[in-house]
Length: 551
Ligand code: N01
Image (cartoon, rainbow, N blue to C red):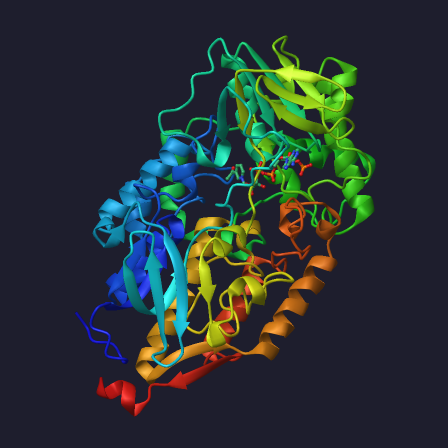
């Protein structure tokens, strides 16, 4: 056991504490432990690795970036060893992949499972983080890296009477391991976001009846998943480096080869041809691989919105139901996260599915047998909340984090997150975020974005070691400038107009601040790489004192 600067022998000092064992926590552990030879503790509340892919076991959960891209790039051996069975892997396969990664790199031995961190307090005198778990363990760490995920704190609206429901209740983001048997059951699901659009078609196939409570219709487009063929797998594996290079050149970390500059520059005929081609490609092709001005120009956006509405009307037999499923003209296309679906709209042609508009007739109360809206009561045996997440800040605020002067992170971020590059916050030295707010984060291929951040953090720690620095702290001016820049980039697009979780608009009382950096992954990577190359401009690095060295 190491004695720390204040002579506290009771609580060991480690180099770093990492929270979470998803993509981010696993890679951070690997880099710090195996490349920098650091002593690292990882705490994970679940009983296994996987993070998002551990918890989101609801029917239909799968990635919507092709599996070959939605994977780690840091190990060529890993890329070659792992075989994806589908173009877009389903949750069990992604979880199995992360378990494979953990085994291959021998990560589990440094992860403490079934343990939640309750508090992390920065001790200015010792320049150490004091981390307390729900098991009563206290660990002191030089670096604190909450890799808790951006979409990990489930949002469960507290409707009046919410505890009164007598049937089974499930939350998509905390789905039971043993699964749910819907056979012969009447099911009610609240929410029609990306999650619900994946789950609804599969639940409808099993349940006796499914009632979908929709507040906002969504512009879903087909995913077009298919089995992986040996030919495609071989072609990717032979060409992986080039594909990753293309991914890094792209806006969102996944290459699209049809992208044209402007929907307004094409004739009606050319535009329709382009839309149809992207529609057939599936996935995010229409959203970010079609026209570069879709999310920037209202007129360009309206063309795409009209195209998707026409597709919905063609897929849904009952015109009244089709109209309910069509987002209104006032709702721009793709300003909420584009959901990718398989048979979602056709599901509403089934006799056992009912769509209920809770915008015009809101839910008033959950009752023991179901729920009551302002004009009707609906009874069911199972109630599902597919109501999303308190994104970015929800999971962070569940931990009592205090920085310099005992300032709670919750207070520092009371008007919205304040970060430099989404990597660090002023007054919270030696604490790093992974895909944090104000970084490209959720609008970039997550595994690649995670690698970018973990590598930046590891390089920074290595630089501090090499140059005798004890702490690194974001400068308030640089932070303010980055916040302003993030806002400017967002304001240049149509995205801040939507009532989306990108803005915190899904959580009552949450400040409405656009939380994603929209300058594109490539540009962002250049910015943070330059910062590192120039000796961490925008940060203050404090040398190790003689006192500390003497310990
Ligand atoms: O959550 P959401 P999600 N009363 O917030 C409704 C990622 N993801 O879990 O739109 C009634 O999008 C809400 O209505 P409204 C992806 O980044 C990835 O579906 O606020 N309804 C909406 O319909 C995605 O964007 C994959 O009016 C309420 C729904 O619940 C993110 O996760 C797959 C309500 C919530 O939709 C979140 O998606 C799935 C209330 N009080 C998800 N509160 C991949 O493929 C909320 N709603 C990798």
